[in-house]
Amino acid sequence: EAGVVQSPRYKIIEKKQPVAFWCNPISGHNTLYWYLQNLGQGPELLIRYENEEAVDDSQLPKDRFSAERLKGVDSTLKIQPAELGDSAVYLCASSSGGANVLTFGAGSRLTVL
Amino acid sequence: GENVEQHPSTLSVQEGDSAVIKCTYSDSASNYFPWYKQELGKRPQLIIDIRSNVGEKKDQRIAVTLNKTAKHFSLHITETQPEDSAVYFCAASRTGFQKLVFGTGTRLLVSP
Image (cartoon, rainbow over all chains, first blue to last red; front, side, top):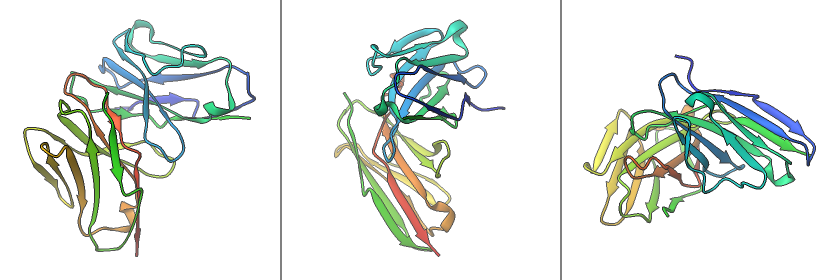
């Protein structure tokens, strides 16, 4: 089993530039999450998908962040335009069957200069 | 919404000692409490979890205890080893609700 795959692992951009992160969850996992992890902090939920439907996006800053999960498998998280405060690790996770057991990807570390 | 507090933020122990990390939660309806270990630069990985129908769960050197009345749960690591050094996160959620809320993490350092 490949696990949760994320790319890119690292991204450095200048402020006001756009950036996108991609996630491929574990096969068969219908629930997909994007978490934000600031340095020295615990992960914070940005958005949760059940299949292709975003069922919890209350923490997603919708003025600059967007996400999609086409066909209920892969997902993309986009930031446009990026701000200095967006520098963080963006973690994708997936789970199945309502079991709450999350498997995380390795994360995408964003640095905004 | 749920709020999870975690203490201490850092913990230094000698190899072979025990380590205890404590968390409190606010939502009395929460009934699922996992613990994740995150090594430097790596993904959080589930190490143990407990559901509210039990008060304690053990897996070799690690154990988790839950006090639903007081709304707190703890991670216990016995006979610590240098490879236990990492950041540990507790979390809480309602079964089926599927929104895990994490604590702020405890950096554990085990010195040889």
